Amino acid sequence: MRVGQHVETGDKIGELGAQESLENGGYSFVTTRQQLLDLPPTTEKAWGTFSCNALYGDLDRVFFNPQEPSLVECTSKAIGLLSRNTTGFFLMVEGSEVDWGSHANDPVKVVSDYLAFDSAVAAAVDFARTDGSTEVLVFSDHDNGGMSLGARGDDYTSVSPGHVTGAIRRCSMTCTEFPDTLIRYKNANGPVDWSIIADRFRALMGIDSLTPEDMLYTIPESVNAGAANYEDIAKVGAILSRRCSIGWTTNGHTGNNVPIYSLLTPGLGTIDNTDIARYCAHLLGVDLRQTGNEFFVALNGLFSDVEASVTLNTTGVTDGKGFATIQTANTTVTLPFFKDFCTTADGRTVALPGITVYSQLNNTVYVAAATKDLITGVRIPLPFRVTYRDFTFSERDPATVTVFTITGRQIKTVRLTSGTTATIDFPSITSTLPAGCYTLRVTSHGTSHVNRFSIVR
Image 1 (cartoon, one colour):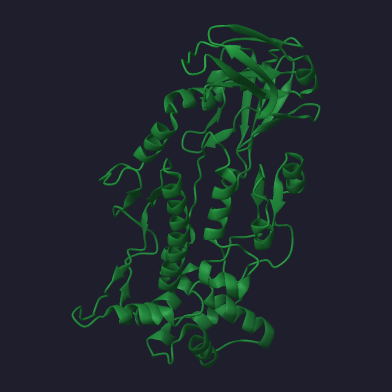
Image 2: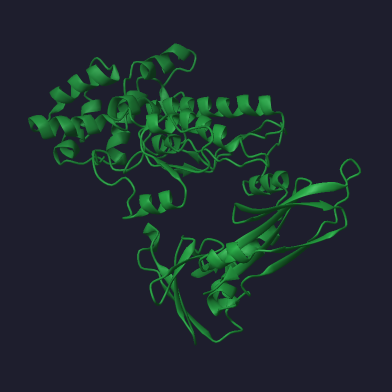
């Protein structure tokens, strides 16, 4: 984020046609706080895009854009919609603004956005305690800024909690956004100097007067040039930090350990951050190795046994661009990086069974294993027939309702007696499916069995 560069109007999506694509895919598309709150509880799929840049922090949102929802509002709405799924759900919520505040050595942003994150955690914990079978994990991916309560030169016996919190409480916005107000003032009224800046500090940051040390910073020069970066924000942060005895060691990440909290498994102790994924997989009953073999296969190796050439275009990959091209004797297919579709030589868009991932570390593209069948033209007969044998036995209910769905769409419900075999024909549904990869899910006794197939037309 560049301070002073927030865009007030324009396309919030960033890609032409993205909103239309999402709505065509059944998503309820919302762009304001009220639209989010008004989503009916029966909403199946929702997509919220509330800014054409980063969202404002919790303290700044009211000042700059009250149409943006808070983190706790997003969390509560997500839990409300997802908890309707009787098979469970996974939700990840990030209080990302704390990290940015730490990069900028902005004590106001760190504190205010951590409190906003704490409110989101409270919403999740309240639901989990009521539900009784939901885990809540709270953790950071790294420490940042080296923030300390007590700065060099302080007398630690005389620094009170009120001294630390009082200066922060008097601020009506974060140090991060303070330069933006100066830039707006400059754009409307002309160049600023330290007298104007001191007035703004008094009005917005609760600092009555600036010292000669404060005015050594080059804040007027940056503001009058029309831009402010992390270094400029850190200067504002330093002015405030000196008044509340908060110290910093860096504008970057540190190697300090960070805490992890678990609702169901308290006292996890010191663990490697990658163990969090393994713990989540354990709770979800997911085999990470099997998932990796299914959805993250090196593209070159996947096509090593067929006549095909694979080329990569990594131009703009740091901005989420780039693509891989696969050419066989029969077709040429392009796979955009970080997308779940490919395009064919005749311009058709075809859904993939997973996301195409490019790793800069080893210059390798990873795709789902089923991508090979789709591209090389493996076909299934249409209409096709599925035979399913219910091997599950339940003494309480020897006959069970078995549901067949294709990619989330329920297409057949039958009642099977344990040990019997059902043959299901799907002529109508498969004859209308477009080319792509699909999931056939068979659910009975609360357990799902998944098979995947491809259609090439």
